[in-house]
Length: 145
Image (cartoon, rainbow, N blue to C red; front, top):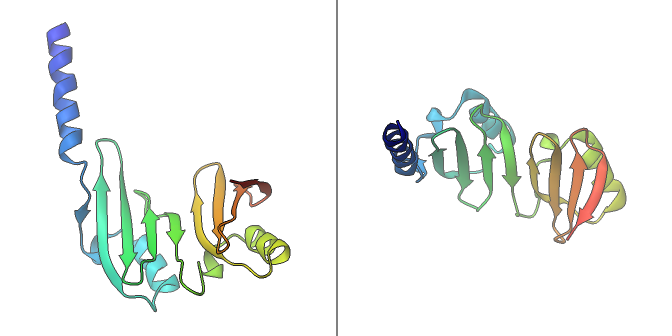
């Protein structure tokens, strides 16, 4: 029985290792919600490459633009990280209203160059390298180092 469990564990590990490298995919292979997000908020940018990163238990996507901006999407096609360090930063339309209001009020001379989200919070980075964390509802939590 232990031998069978070991064989299964080794087989599962080798399967997950085989898929560790992201692979290039066509933009049309992204989930529709991801395609719509890119076409709506980044229509003025040229796509350089699109990756599918598939693990044993999960998969995610990354779109990289020719100017260096990039977007990460989860398996459902929802954005998890948007980074756009050009002169305009992340589009205001994708930033939750409370977060955008906080940044404009407390840091009127700055803008968001990166925003990431998970189940519990949002993290933003401003163009002056200041990192700010907000809860899921967009309420300020703290400044980070």
